[in-house]
Each structure stands twice: as structure tokens, then as C-alpha cells.
Length: 160
Length: 145
Image (cartoon, rainbow over all chains, first blue to last red):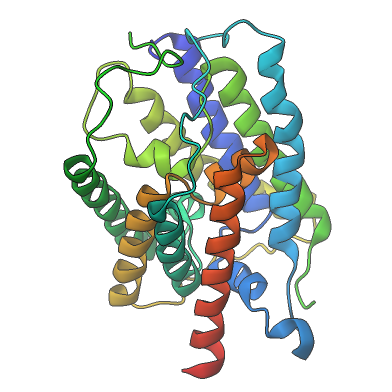
């Protein structure tokens, strides 16, 4: 159902605007990300609060953008809005976030900037992104075995 | 505050929020990069191509931003970013990011840019947790080791 020309061109446009935003905000630079995460520099000098402004600016715009779904019965090029259906605060959420934070702090790469860097610093980004995809698929496969998935798809996300 | 760039940081963030808005209103999808990438395999008819196009847009847009950004704003450095980590470090960190974001169902974009303004309790917990864990990691790597 995401195969219409409008849906496909919108996906490319969204990714492109996203990547441009990362570059304009310089979040593609691992050193700049680490300069934000380095909280010891708040007192000793040299701390860079930029990342908070990036997340604040993005969240502010999407605060409005997300609520546009109330104006539309359905998305312009899809049968329904895919609202996340999880609500529980569980161990995978916490443990996963801890692991993600360690990798993010060590490399200065989170998934978006890492993939964006395939065009800017391809040598390093290819290694990171390859390992990231392998880790994601590994964790997904392991969780698919340990947690039985609901047999009936959620009413929110009808399958084509 | 050596390199603090509030104008372009806010503008870049707003572009990311705009990208998320476009994908939500037209495709009904949240712009969470780790989930879009992680679910691109296994291939599913009708559910893979839009993911690959979104992901292909990221380096394309970043390249445009690096080429044209510095001409528009003097705050943006014209240099290419440097990866300050060796191959073993990059692969280890990538594995941690991949496993972690899959377990947590989201990263800085899905939980941060998209989850916080939805007032998702899971996203508030995730963002607080990965920010703290990343800050501790940077502290150890820069000031302890």
C-alpha cells in the first residue's frame, strides 16, 4: 500500500529533507555530537548545547505536524496512520536504550547521521552502518523467537 | 561554547521535524530511522521500497546540506566530518546501536524527534536513558580512559 508514486516520492523527499537537516545542524559530525554529550565540559568550558536545539526544533515542528492527523481521515497516500501500539515501560526499552547510548557515545553516531555519512565519510560509515543493521536484525530475530507476536495484525495498520 | 551554533542547530532540527511531518501526513509513518532501516529486511512486498528510498534520501540530503549549507550560513563549517574511531571501535559501536535501538524500538529520531512531541511515556524513558548512558560513555572515554 506504500507503492504508489506519491508514497514512494514522498519517502525519498522526506529522507532528503531529513538528511539536509542533519547536515545544516552539523549533526553529521561525530565530534559535535560528543561535544554535547560531554557534560564535564559544562563546568570546565567548551560544552556545545547545539544538539538540544536540534532536538527541540525538530520536536517543536513535529508537535504540530503529528497533530495534523486529526484533520485527515487517513494519510494522503496510505490507508491508515501507523500509530505505535506499544505502551508498556519494559526491560527491553530500558536495556536497549542503555546499549544504544553506549554505542552512540562511543562513536558519536546514531542511526540517521550514520546513514547520512555514507555520502560524507563513507569508509567509516559503511563499517558502522553494516554492523548496526546486523545488530538490529540479530536482535529482531532473537526477539522474534523469545516473544510470540500477536497473530492478528493491529486494527490500526491494515495490511495491503 | 566553542562551536555552539544555535541558529543552524534550530533550523536543521526544524528541517528534520518537517521531514517527519511530510512522511506522517502523506505515508502515515513515523520517521524513526532505526525502525525504518531495521524493518527493511526481510523484504516484504509493498513495505520495502519506501524504506529504501527514505534511507537513500539521508546521504543525498546530507550531501546537499554540506555543499550548499556553508554558502548560506557562515555558522556551518565547509569541512567534511571526521570519523574519530578505528574499525574495531566502529563495528562494536554499530552493533550496540543496532541491537539497542531494536530492543528499544527507536533511536534519537523515533523516540526523540517523533516520540517526545507525541507525549509517549516510552519515548521519554528511552530518551532519558540513552542520553544518560551516552553521557556516561563519553565521560569515561574522554576523561577516565
